[in-house]
Image (cartoon, rainbow over all chains, first blue to last red; front, side):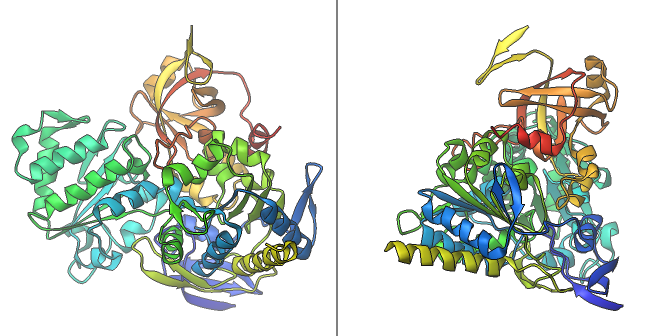
Length: 434
Length: 137
């Protein structure tokens, strides 16, 4: 038995890097400390896709990697409008090959940001983001706001490692010397811990951000007695708490990005943070979901100039998320083939868009069977990044961290599979004289 | 009573505002979505006690969730934290069968804030493989 320390978790955007596991006979046998229940589940493993497979007469038939590579390359090379989607539960090295494949094919490349923090990206492009690292939050922040986020369930170590419950250089007393504000439609495990819980009416985030902005700028007189289900008294109390912070940190989740005003909610959240700057230091950070969704946004931006929903059909990068997101492309029934990697649109896309995805040839690269596998036509099992493969990922605050390899895998890494598909696509094109 | 919506005629049930989101057990099964634990956790709809009484539904009985975008059968659960008039479904294939794919020019579907109608039903909750079958054909 070997004890491995400083293991990095490849589940959510917290990318915890202080995990201790035990490894025996090339298996992770125990997660000793550091991981939350969700991360522990990832490290301990699940049922795997056992073999590459190709769908024949409606059934997936096992085949060799060589056969699956050939079939996948044929589908992609023959496609007039391929969609390459996912990229968030793998490492940046694989993402880089993905962009190269998209360029070679003249494809649309999109990632899971388009169904989680895509609106946040649009807002940040619009007005910037006064943010900081999670290390700064840990060491400095004494007022924490979670808005439309439930970290106690979705990012279970976030409060313990970085925010409300953590102890840092200037926050050595931990939560005793901190204030927690939670804004949500539902009472949640997170809201139960809060000093102030603002239970807002669904979809009224924009109004409540505006009211707090007005109060922080000294215009409390224009705020009515109730805004979005929150009393003026509670809004005034929250604003006073924000003003009194030595260092405030707002974290926002999909409660804000998924509702009506979308990116406009985030623009207003950022402007509320700026209003707080007239009194004290305040920052704002999106609660990114997948462990490397921030990383594919980085890689896609280095390589194409844009973070998601990029069309490379023209021979240069074209960016228009409302037209080119995977959901938009599928609902318009525009793409005629798709490569899905490190994500599961079968589970996480609206039914309306899955209908088209189920009709077209789909290539899936994933360690685990999931709803997308049910209609995939070519399936590649891959090594689990962070357990069986190493590589670079970006935490939710855009800090790069290298995933560690804990055990050997019988399956190839995502990067290796993609490189082979790319080589085969190039060979087909050369043969056809394109 | 029946009402015409954007895509189809739907039967009137109890009107709610539908939202979807993460839960711990859903997250723990992100890589094992074909498991029973995922099915039990995600194929469900949380409602306030008052809304359950209005529907005449006890916890763990089946309900049909209808929206302009589809319909799906899930188990009802009582959740005191969910306000009256709000229905919460864990993110996953069942919630996504009834959310909107209209991105309003932003690339982002509507996963929260959907007008839905809920009614009691004796129909069975489809397992994930059966649910995915409904998209094929």
